[in-house]
Image (cartoon, rainbow, N blue to C red):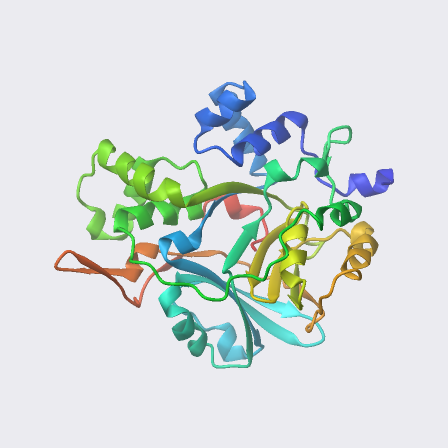
Length: 361
């Protein structure tokens, strides 16, 4: 890489990288401290500073909780661009050879067909039957310690092909019973406010939204729900280091073909590849690819059996917001029996500083 190429990448100091790597498999700040031998107060300060460079995300096994992430690309329509549907995480305008709208959503598995029916337009649906985010602890080879940057070196991707699973994404999902509302409140705010939010803060926020949480919950009760019901559904934490959108636009890459799942699993190992939806023989990835790396990127694509039916899609940098459905609202209770329901409510724009400076994917 030339010095100019390095100058276009954000600096991640060695101590910051040490904490980012440890955070991916840690449930608390104290765990990070033990792994890195850095004091908890210093870890907190560094995590705070890292908000200026990216965002730390909680990554669960959504299917464990009965939910599934969705990505739906629709032909552009003015009315559709103003449509709000329960479960929607975001609406983004996409530009390519044609104009599209990308809906991302998080909904119970049982409501996938209902959600897509409400998008009354020609559409492509990619279910996150396998949903991945960039994982620092599995991507050490992409951190350049000398230059203190995350380096999306596509040449290293060739060596990852043989060690990466090549099977298709799951296509059938058996819906499970609905989780408890406390479990879903914890999941909601870990997704919205980051993996290290305190349980007391979760309940405080939930009670400010829904009277069902007005009851005083003991620390032991909250801890029980977290340990027994939420931790088993946690996979890891992701860190997304973002590039300036004005210089490097967010790209949405829709792949179809025999090796589309393999491609997504390899690319998500690279920094600046943020999220991947894998569904059968299709995949969809959100990424920022610095222009100095695009030749390597397309060279790597050329060796795999995939198509890009829509070409490269550029996400509009305008009107980018992130919404978070209150997941417990999808569960009704009658005679102590929990059941899935379709609510009429409740999304809220996330205003956490964690997302203020970052493009959303």
